[in-house]
Image 1: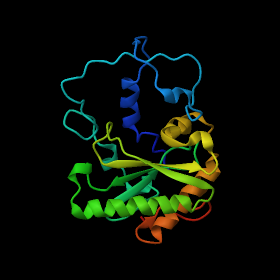
Image 2: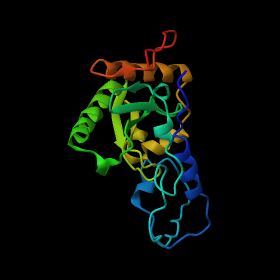
Image 3: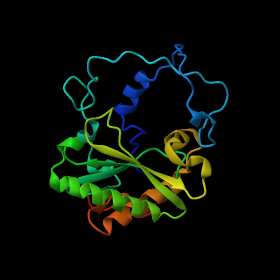
Image 4: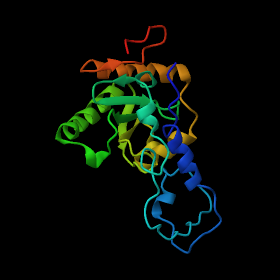
Length: 218
């Protein structure tokens, strides 16, 4: 059983929830065309929320002065599915896609702090993770995203889109992943173990193992 890293790595989700509390304020702005697209998860009557004035500055993220402590820095390697000297990969709770992962730096840096070596490794890790997720089988595309608005510790999101899932194309996939029934736990753990094993073929340690196999050395 893998540790529960959560959709937003623990405290990131709590902070986002506070920012996304329901409101009644609407505006006269027109609806975008994509609300009519088949990939959009919702249907019915919509109104655009009234834009709020900008704050003087961004609120502190986790790991920044004035913000909560960094959960990634406090996490041990056994909370991840794979790790090496500079990078760690974690899995979320089961969601509506075959697998959903985070790639994080081991050191507490953000994207603009990456030196040339880590920047080069990042490109390689993105490609390695794409290939490792494809090895699960039945994957149409791997969606990669980086926001970084909740936590200052560098992390990227990886979503496995099932092959043939036409409604899950494009930018609405993260919403569908939260809406659709989650992948069964046993299958989720098996998929995660495939990704970890594929990454470990090149470097690092596969921490997640197929069920019934002992975990690797930490």
